[in-house]
Image (tube, rainbow, N blue to C red; front, side):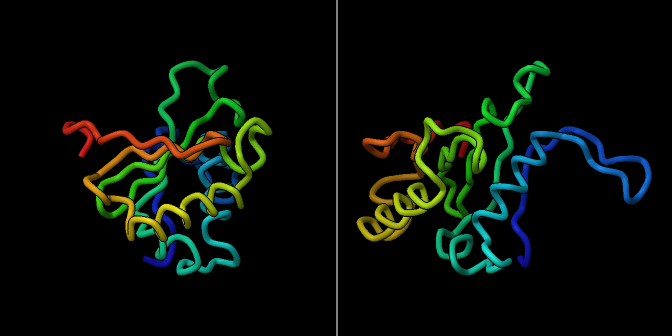
Length: 141
C-alpha cells in the first residue's frame, strides 16, 4: 500500500469538503503515520517493520481525547501488536520517536521479525529501561 492504514477511528468526517476533521484521536494517528513514513517513504520504517496498521485508541470520555492521554498501537502483518504509546510530542515521560524506532530496530536485529521467537506478541516499547514482551491473547490474534 502507498499510505499507512489507520484502524479504530470512530468519529465521522466533516460534512463538507475542506472542513477540518477535528478529532484528536485522528490527529494523533496522522502524527504517528508521519513519523513512521518520513518524507512519505513507506520503506524506511513501515515496510521494514512489516506494519499493517496504526491502531487508534478507543476513547470513552472526552477528557481522554487529549494527545498526552492517547495510547496507540502498531499491528504487524504477522499479528503482533506494538504498544507505541503517545503520539510524537505527546509525552516527555516516554522515549522519543527515534528511541522507539531504535528499539524496534534492536528487536529486529535480535529476532528477525516481531513474531519471533514464539509470537505473535504484544511488544511494549514505551519504557525507558526495557522492551516488555507478552504473548498475544488468542482472541486478539
